[in-house]
Length: 282
Ligand SMILES: [Zn+2]
Image (cartoon, rainbow, N blue to C red; front, side, top):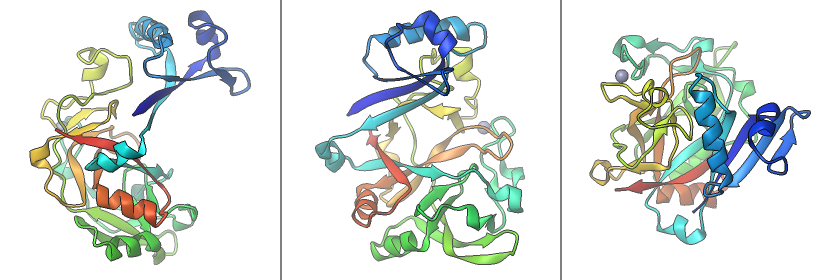
């Protein structure tokens, strides 16, 4: 695997802490974008700067993303993948989709169950994609993706209609994908936290960890590691544990884990809107 990190830093701070020739200035000169391999020594400077700012409750960088690239051999050898869906900036709740909050954890707010059909503003779903997820991690798939999943006999999922707001008619282009099991247990050496470069035992990292074990952190930082004994052999399974927070339309969410068969079907049929990271069965 080749692993890079893409960091967005205010140019003012970047000038103070980093060599001038590293990274690219974007955003009309106010943002430095730094894309480097994770073993690049410059990340030592980033870690020092982050330690300085986070001790004051701030952050040196304000945007980050890992880019993980795999060789063909690595992809072929993997058993399980994390599926990362194209995000759309809406959620069922804003169009009347109901949730049963009674089942949710009072500490981390995870576990609320969808209690009505999914309603979305369907015309805002991108025609260029076959798989998307909302801000609340409701997964919607195109009728083409549905046909592919049925033809390949992908197990572990069901489909429910999506209603379109404001007409309240059923979409003939999108369905909600419901994943039936959520027992893939995420285990060490998985890293969860608010952001990279933080002390995993530090306050920032701990503040989103649910003491009842539901939520591991605000974000997944590393690749996913799944306890082998908990992988039941369905093609699509959710993680037992959650990430994220209840904030506005956002909800804590589980990881979507898929078999090699699913990755191959999606690639062969050229379904759009999903990226894969290897998840390790340990
Ligand atoms: Zn909890």
